[in-house]
Image 1 (cartoon, one colour):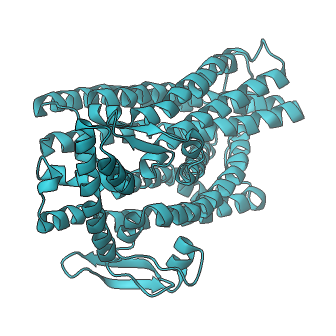
Image 2: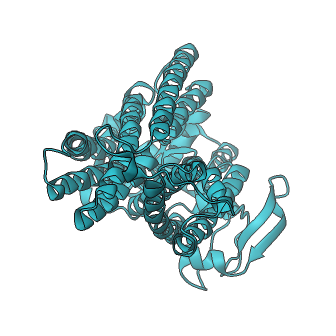
Length: 519
C-alpha cells in the first residue's frame, strides 16, 4: 500500500470528521437545554418561556440540518476510502452504525418535524414530550457512534475467524458495554453540553450588551449557567474515568500523553507542563504533581504506569508471537484440518494484528529479521509531542470552563448579568469549547495510531486501493462543498440571532428591550 494514499485518506477522513463535529456538540447540548426551557414553560405557563424555547429551537434546527448532512458523508467514506477496513471488521463495526440509523436517527428525524410544527397542534405536555424524544434521539445517536468508535479503541466481544479471514462478533453485549465506549460517551456528551451552554451564554451576552431582548437573554443565561456548571464538572470527573480506561486498555496512549519514556516507581506523578525531548527521551523543564497520575490511571498508590520503552519491548514480544499465529493462519488456508496449525492459531491469535505491522515493510511477516521486528515495534509509538500538548490544552480549557460557569452561576444571583466585563468574557468564550472538543478528538485518534483497530488492524492495511489524484479530487470537492455549507450555516445563524426571539405573532414586549445600565 502506497503510504501517500494512506496518509491522504487519513487526512480526508480527519477533515470531514472534524468538520462534522463542529455541529454535533451544539446539537447534543441544545437539545436537552430545550427540554429544560420548555419544562419551565409547561410548569409556569409563562409565555416568555415559550419565546425562549422557540428561539433556541430555531438555532438548534439550523445546526441539526448541517450535522446530518455532514455525518452521512463520513459513513460512506468507510466504503470508499477504507474498503479493507470495512471488509475486515464490518461484521462488528457495522452493527452499531446500522442501529444508530434505524433507532436513533429515525427517532430524531421523525420527531424534529413535530417539534417545529407542532406548537399550535399539540398540548404543552405533548410538545414537551416530543422535544424530549428529539433530545433522546440525538444523544442515542451519539451513543451508537461512540460504541463503534470505542470498539476501535478497545476491540472486545470479537475474534478473528481464519475461515472467513475477518473479525466476527462473539459477544455483542461486550461490544455494547465496552468500558472505553461508555467512558467516551459520557465524556463526549458532557463536552457537548458545555459547548451549548457557552453558546447560549455568549449569544445572550451579545443581546445584553446591545440592550436587546433582555427578558429572553437573562433567562437563557440563568439556564445556561446552571447547565454549564454541572456539565463542566461532569467533563472533568468523567475525563478522569476516561484516563482510567485508557491506562487499562491503551497503555501506549497514556504513556505518550505523559511523554513517559521510562516506567516510574509507583505512584507516578502527573506532568503539568514541560517540553518533550524525543532525542533524549525525557521531558525538559517539567513541573510534576506527585502521585496524581498513579491515582488516575491505576486507582491505587501501588500500581505502575508503564513507560514507552517497556511498551515497545512488549510490542516486540507480541510481534514475535503474532508471526507464529500468522503462520498458522496461512497453513489453515491450505488445510483446515491441520491440528498443529489450529493449536498455534488458538495460542497466538490475539497477537496476529501485531504481526500485520510488518506488512508495511514486507509482503510476508514470517521473513522479518529481529531488527525489522523491533522497527515495527517502534511504530506503535504515537506522536508524543502532539499528544503531550493537546492533552494539556484540552484539560486546561476544561478546568477553565468550571471557573467560568461557577462565575456565571454566581453572577446570575449577585448581579443579574449586569457586569459588562463578564458579558464580554462570555462572548469571547463562545469558540473555546469547540477548540477543546476538536483537541480531544485529535488526541483520541492520533493516540490510537498506528492502529485502525487497536492491536487488530494497522491503519495502512485498511485503506482502499485509490490513486493520489482520486483522493485529492475528493478532498478538494468536499472542501468546496463544506465551505459553501459553512457559509450558508453561519449566515443563517447570524440572521436568526440578529432577528432575535421575536415571532411575527408575538409582541416585542415579551422579549424585552430594556437597555443595560453603564457600570
